[in-house]
Each structure stands twice: as C-alpha cells, then as structure tokens.
Length: 545
Image 1 (cartoon, rainbow, N blue to C red):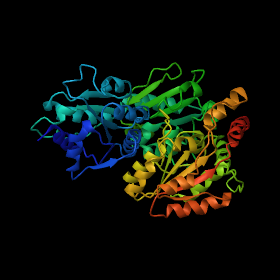
Image 2 (image 1 turned 90 degrees about the vertical axis):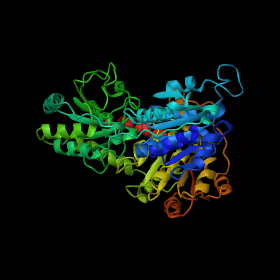
Image 3 (image 1 turned 60 degrees about the vertical axis):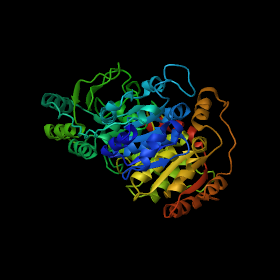
Image 4 (image 1 turned 180 degrees about the vertical axis):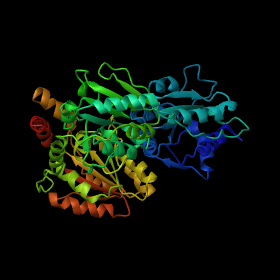
C-alpha cells in the first residue's frame, strides 16, 4: 500500500469520524485513500479556515482531536487562524497539510513556503513525513500530543511524493491518557487553607469542562457552601440555577462577579486558564490566598502565586478536597449578590421594542432551548452579551472562543456541533461582521442537511471596537459598513430565512426554526445602545454589595 493509505488507516485507528477540508493537487493521494475509508467521512468545506474551526469545535465537544486537511501554500495559510484558535482555546486538533515533493523543498518553488515554521508558534508539535517508515509513529504522536493536557493543535506535513511511496505496516494502537491522582499532602494543606478562609470563592476555568469534573465541582461547592464563578469557556460547569452559582466572570475588570472576587480572601482556582481572564484583574494587590487545582503546574504570574498547588486529575482532586474539608457554615452576603445577578438576567425579557434589546433576544433563546441544546457564539459585541446574560445548565452547551477570540468561528463551529450531537438543537449567535467572514458555509450546512439555526445580530458596525472607541474617545472611526439583505442571502443558499417585524415575533420564529428539518436564519436588528448601559450599570451593581 501507499503512505497515504497507511496514513488513513492510522486515522481510522485513532477513531477519527470526520476530516474537514478542501481538496487540492498536492493531497490527491490522501483524498483518494480517504475516499475508500469506510469509517471516515470527508467534509468538504468552502474555506480552509472553516475546516480548522470545525475541527476546533469538534475537539472541544468530544475531547478527541478534530482533523482538518488542506493542500500546500494558500491552503495551509488559510488553516492558520483556526489552528491558532484551537491553540489558545485548548482544543485538541490535528492538522494535515500537503507539500511540494522533497525534490524541491530546498529551493524556491511554486506555492512552496515553510509551513512547518509558520505553524510552529501555534501548534504543540509538528513534523514532516520524510520517510515512509515514520508514518505510524508521527500520526500516533500527533494525536497523543494534541490530546494531552493542555490539549491543542498538532500538525503533520505530507510531501506529495512521500504520499505515493510504497510501505507496509500497521497503525500503532492508541493508549488512554491517565493523569495521576492528587498528592495527599497538598490536599491536606489546601483543606487547612479553606478552613481558615472567611470568604472563599471557587474560580472555574475550561479545564473543569475538559476534565469532565462538573459533578465533583458542584459537590465540593455544595458541601462547603462556597460560591462558584466561572470564565466564558467554563459556562455550564455548574447549573446557573444552583444557589451557589455566581455566573460568568471575565467581561472586564469591574465585572458582576468582581464583587464576589473582591471580597474573597481565598480563591480555589480549578482548571483556571489565565488566557481568558488575567489574574491582575481579580488579584491586583496580589494578596489573595490561592489554591491551584489543575493537570499542569501554575503559570508564573506576579498576580497568581498559589499557596497550594494540586497537580493531577481535576475531578479526583476536587473530590479528595471535599472529603478532607469540614462542613462550613453558609456565608452571608452571597445571596444578595446572586439575586442582583438574576434580576439583571431577566431585565428587558418582556421588552417589545425594535431594534431588539440583547437581553430580550437571549431571554427568548433560553426560553426556547432545552438544557442540553447548544449555543455557539461567534466573536463580537454579541459574545459579551452571551457570556454575561445567557445562562447555561450543562457543560459544553455554550461554545465561546475566548482564548484567541477569532471572528468567523460561529457558523463552522455550529455545523461541527450538529455533527457531534445530531439529536440536540444547535443555534449560532453571530454578528453581521463575523457572519460575512464565513457565510459561505451555509452551502456546507445545506449540503450536509444539518438543521441548525443562525441568529444574525445586525447593527452595521464592528460593535466591540465601536463600543471601545466611544468609551475612550467619544467618537468612532472605521467601524461602520453596509450589509446585504440577509434574508435573501440565506434564501439563495436554500435556507429558511426570516426577519421579525416586532420584538414579539422573534420567539415564535425561533421556535418554528428549531422544529424545522433544515437550516434556518433569523436576521435580528439589534440595539447595541445597551452596551453603554451595561457599562454604566456595573458600578451601581457593585457599589451596594
């Protein structure tokens, strides 16, 4: 068999279900081998960036590396943004790119660039297949490294002449990754610190979601009566209806949950990743006692100096800490803060004005969706509203890019989410700016027959930049643009498409689309004047508490 055949057999052995990508001349052998696979489905996308985003979200939802494939040169460069997103969002991903033959990689050559060197800053590991005998080891290592904490992308480059070479061999069998249990001495030291705390708080990051440790987290919080705040990417780690949930932190330095963090003398940082929310925002004086619980030792940061580090399996560590601590009495004050937060969630839920208030759109969205359904947020001003206002019941039901925070991930990510969970309803919330970056994937959604709902928030501007320009300078520059008729655009891709005429139209339209057998789009004129309102409200929320 050829190297390309063995490569595909290795992917099958790794349990790969989908390869997302675009065809190209230098990957013809790989595509031919994929065409004969009975286990792997090749998902042809309309842009390589979308292929990488799909692999990214697949990896986040499954914990297994998503795979994307592109040819050399522009095919590889188009993957780069999605790969970088997976790198900072800690999503396991394996990228495969074609390359010119070994006979011309040493000189100037058509479409040849140093892809290995270009990818190195945003992958955990990469290698070129230069000899047929290395195929099985390279593929196995790519998947192992991608999946090992902290997970992220790896990259394999396959020169076109190597892909055609003859080889005999068998894939190396995947081995499960196990993390050590927590050190008993560290658990006891952490228990002592918690017992001494007057106002502890648990700060949860995406590591708890990746580690499937939400049950252990909730059990610890409830046993010790300690409130929980979480980052954008950890939404759903504890049900927002739990009386100990302080919702999302990380919008800005003076956040809702900042009140809880400001009062906290001990912070249990579980699976916390500072790429989402810098410690300087919540520990500016560096005086808080920190208990670090993660699969990796703490990053060095002047504002994050843990008194205790528990390194190992996060779920086991949380469970061990719960069993080692004495039951604490419920704290005073956190109930008032939680009630304030919940009142903000319901504000404008009955508003009837058009353009619609962000709060109204998200309240209707929560009302229409089941706890297990999935919302994928693109990046823009709407992302801040989703993070702040949209409550989650379960882990991995709100997918937000917040490490790299790349616009354009929404629609491709929603397609991947629907492939992973065909039984769940999937809604993508996207701004008009981000939507037009990868709107061509409407054709992919229609071709695959995936029934998802795209909700486009329309304001004719790059909202976050506009918001910050107004805050800093009192004026805007370079942020406005015109839009197509999104309803007609979606209909051209054979989507059902609607635009509410009043705010009260939105919920029934959304419910109709969620029951549809095909993809749908709803164009929503949005009132981003509420952005300034949100900023002004922060002070009045925090001051009395």
